[in-house]
Amino acid sequence: MEDTLNLNIGILGHVDSGKTSLAKRISQIASTASFDKNPQSQERGITIDLGFSSLKCPIPEHLKGPNDKLQHLQFTFVDCPGHASLLRTVIGGAQIIDMIILVLDICKGIQTQTAECLILGEVFCRRMVVVLNKIDMIPEEKRALTIQKMSKRMHLTLKDSIFKDSPIVSLAANPGGSDNSSQMPVGIDNLIEVLKSHAEIPERCPDKPLLFAVDHCFGIRGQGTVLTGTVLQGSVSLGDDIEIPSLKILKKVKSMQMFRQNVNTAKQGDRLGICVKQLDSNKFERGIVCSPSYSSTIHAAIIPLNFIKYFKSHLNSHTKFHISIGYETVIARVTIFRSCTVEDSNFDVGKEYVYVKEFCHVDTNGKEVDDMKFKHFMLIEFETAVLTTPNCLVIGSRLDMDMHKNNCRLAFWGSLILGFTDKNYSKTDLPNLRIFSSKTKVGTIDRVVDRYTVIGKNIFKKDTNLAFFVGLEVGFSTGEMGIIEGGFGQSGKIKIAVKSGGLSEGTMNRMEGKKKGKAAKDSGDTNEVTNSEPIRFTLSFKKFKYVTNKKITQ
Image (cartoon, rainbow, N blue to C red; front, side, top):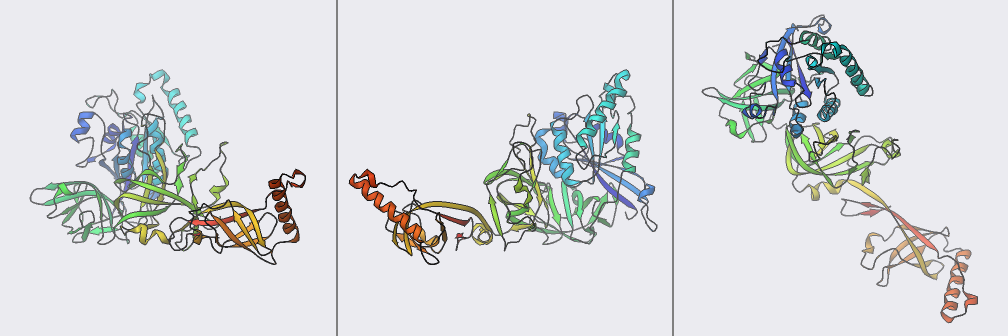
């Protein structure tokens, strides 16, 4: 439908805020998956899966171009679950939307899942309309004041976010609270006008390879299997070959429909049903469909780290998170690292990076820490291999946190920079990552062999492999510099060659005095005992986490 602009509108909010009732009121056409048709939804009385419906209207004047063929604006509404246990489904749905309708029960205000929906909105899109629903539950004499107070509270909540200028619409989608209610909804026409006035033509990439997010799959006897979903990137036409990478099969597009209308082609942003032959719908429920060979299976990945400020815990390396990519959510272990300089913001395998044990974006006083000036990245190691496409969005969360507490479970996000396809990536790929920790060891001079050679102690254990440290430079507390030549004896002592003319006279005298003092102490002559501090030496080095041939350098 070349004359139609399709915009995908996510309807998000806390459970029981009235999202599905609102979707019914503003929709003209329902898809096969909409309005809680799922038997489990009807049994539990809540939305448990994504629902889709649409509204078509004339294209608004501000979207018309001088030579534009657009005649219609179609809103595809994505009704998302609001229950805390279904957050991963909401994450999958959020990735296909262009705009959000955030629904609040005006009697309850912002609730836990309302906040999580706001955060997802900041990650995935830039436009939002706030709906204050169930105004019929407020006595008429108090209604205007209640709407005013809640609107003010929402404006304060959004004032520091990208949604600070979002319009707020008050309505009653389902007066009386029953689907069989004879009362007419209040404020629906106003909402539709606000949606139309705030609609924008999003950036589309029709020339890129096809990426199609399938959310439902079902068979039609005598015709084939229908894959319903949203075109995230590129375009698709009748007769095209498409790949279902999770099944490792190619299929040819037999026919296509957009909300019951046959079409020959579809592009990014379109809600679509694709019919293919000889596909068992029981083997593929949801996931990625794409151009042949566009998807890959990876076992680990690197992303830029974008911390979600509402996540109240710190991010620690070597901890596990729930990682969502598309409609998949798997467990993975993360390792955090940062650039060595403030100016260095692009990831490059050939560069060195600093290992970060704990990521803290603010200190105890709420001020941003200096470390945040550096660009941070994250290595993600999946427990189960996942399907990805270039630059796909990755979201990290802690879905195991108590869903009933006032906690944000969304922790970080980023777009895929690098994926490791080799199952043995820890041996083939990770050694190329130059991630290091800065280490410092301090020892003492045990004795002087001569002006150019000293013996050091109290820095290594007797079973330490000293071969890693040979050739590294140390600094003496008296100012001289030395080079580690190797071990001395079996107790962890080392032999150090003194650089640039050897030890100074002052250092030699100090060591001689220390030697006399020790001899006097051993003989019991306390008058000759000196109180001079031992001469110390410091070794600073980099210890690389994954490099196998040279783990330690300076």
